[in-house]
Image (cartoon, rainbow, N blue to C red):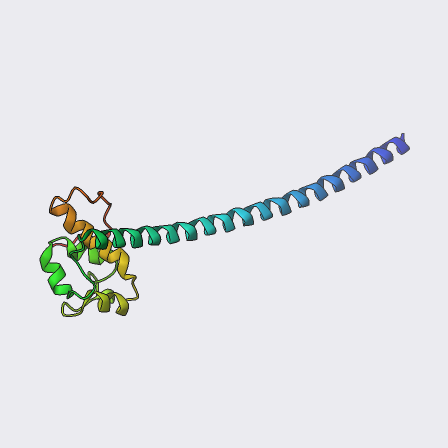
Amino acid sequence: MVYVALILAIVGLVLAWLSHKQNGELKERIAETNSRIYRLRREKEELQEVAEREIANLRFELLKLKGELRVAPEMRVGDILSIHPQAQQVLAGFHLGGCSSCSIDGRQSLAEAAAVNGRELEPILVALNTLINESKGAAAVAPERLKTPNIQLHF
């Protein structure tokens, strides 16, 4: 009877050791899978950002080719703000004005303001021109969701 108990104990220890080994292997596989998922998600986000930039560039070129580009890089920010009442909200959505850390001078050109604040110019131009084209009833330009800030300005 003692030998049977001893054999059962040894079998139990071997099974416990095998289970522990399999558990470790499964943990490693889960960690590898999580790492792959993280990398793929990061790559997807990077590709999505590149695609959004390319789309903005294409929209900019399309507006330029159609002759519907009303806001140009050399225009002064003050002039742009006087064209449309929501232009300030669009610029604030790109962190150009709207808070103390991203303030802009109304005498600066749009290109200068974007460069000083480290922003890409083409998406800003697309958003501003889309805003102006939609407000003037230009049906040729597809409606686009404008980038606006997550704050409301009250005067």
